[in-house]
Length: 290
Image (cartoon, rainbow, N blue to C red; front, side, top):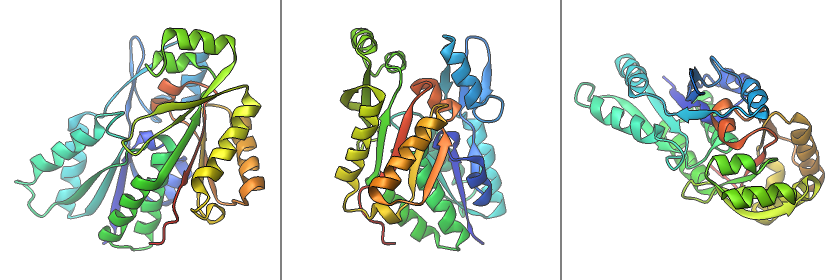
């Protein structure tokens, strides 16, 4: 019996990838001023971005304990070996909730074989972990082999992020009101990263879209130069900006010869905080040899 891979919708994997590798995806809750939605189920990313452009504000809430309990209890009853990979614990409480539910079920199901992993990642950076786990599970790799891979990916996955409108970073608490105002006036495009602790922090700023894309390409080389970029899967995600994502892909192909990409739209849960026009790229900074 193979290993079942589970994740939450914050991984932003395209639907065809989720289906191909039989990944069980649990939707994060998205909230507006009057209703609750399930990310990717009862609300689409496109709807989120269209509404945000009109000034609407969305928030998110973590997956409820009951959802985890029902899912994990089902797996335990079926005797399945499973790995649940969670959005960074610094950005969401899904990891902590899932871990607590697994612990609470151990007395009733002493043979339960469910591991809960903090990806310390977000969006398609998190998604690359889930994708690789799905590939390995489909190939019949052992749970221990998959867990070893996840440990490596958590330590070596890079997140390079830029937002089109710094106002959304202000709403999410990443910059001050003054920084957002000045940044908007000067057309400043911040570049953010996710250090190994799983937070998301600004680390550079550039004026103008073309310059920020060029700088992102440079950073890929600076951080991924020893990682065999040409032969790894590169993740690109966008906030309803397929033209920008396509341009970024073409620049990476030209500069580094990469051919294997996963490209998708940032989902409603992540997009509610990053906003339309966001562009992200994800890659390993060391070669995985497992």
